[in-house]
Image 1 (spheres, rainbow, N blue to C red):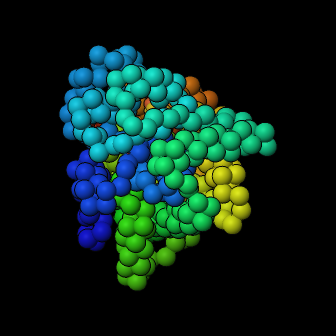
Image 2 (cartoon, helix red, strand yellow):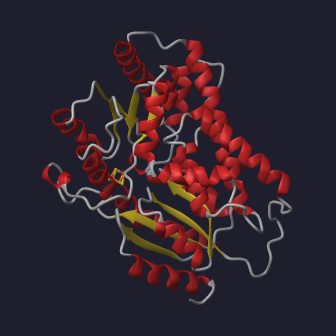
Length: 382
Ligand code: SF4
């Protein structure tokens, strides 16, 4: 395993202690945010360290149940639980988007129980009209102003332009890594891809970009395989994974062991988080608003647009089946699922399956269902 891949896996595994070390080394203030719909470029340009919040798989949820209803999703409950337990003590503040209902209402809970120095919200547009982009641009301006008050300084246009260039480069590298999924012998497992993406939620963007550049440089040099136009007869079952965010990433290993290749995903901690390429050299906030409004999360995307996104992926990647892996109690994804499921079956005549996932999944039953699904499509027998 390439040393950078190993390091990325360790970063994801030990995110809180890695962030604590980064803070001690750089003295940078750290701001957490939920979901990939907030432009981290603004934090970066402010000299802050952005952290896309994600719960580690450390322990059962206990303290959060005093504050949050049990019927909320496991992602939010686990994250809040770990904040209450002081696992994210490196944070100096948080930005909570008005994205799904669960996250939207966490703003008040967070303010009441864990008042960091900085707390703000962000309204997210659902429609994609000129008017809503203007509104979203103003929202970003408001958050930028509040961040400037917090840092007692200005976020310069140059710093913002540089941050956009850096983040675009980072996104392009992640897209390139994903393109390797379509080769005969992909150099990366699905878990590797998620570790690449999620270590980017933790590390400084320059360092992460450097690591990705090194990693891809080496892979390209050694790759004897090219993007597959003539796929071998006995190729693995090609799956698309959809469903918000995958918390228990052991699911990814189960899928691959069962004989399938994940050739595309539609997760907030996967491909959604590096979708937008932001226009460079133009009005920075407007460009950020325009690009980030296109991230295809369930809570900000009309069902027709989500279906178009999935249609493109299924066609381009020659997908054999779609696995919806949706967190228990994630209303956002579960509202969209029946319609997307029906439309995909009608249009592509490929099998689909719904898996209800959790913070810590029961691996046995999960494995049985995944193996049966893959076998039904034509993968190896378990
Ligand atoms: S998993 Fe669903 S309900 Fe939970 S935070 Fe994400 S979008 Fe919201």
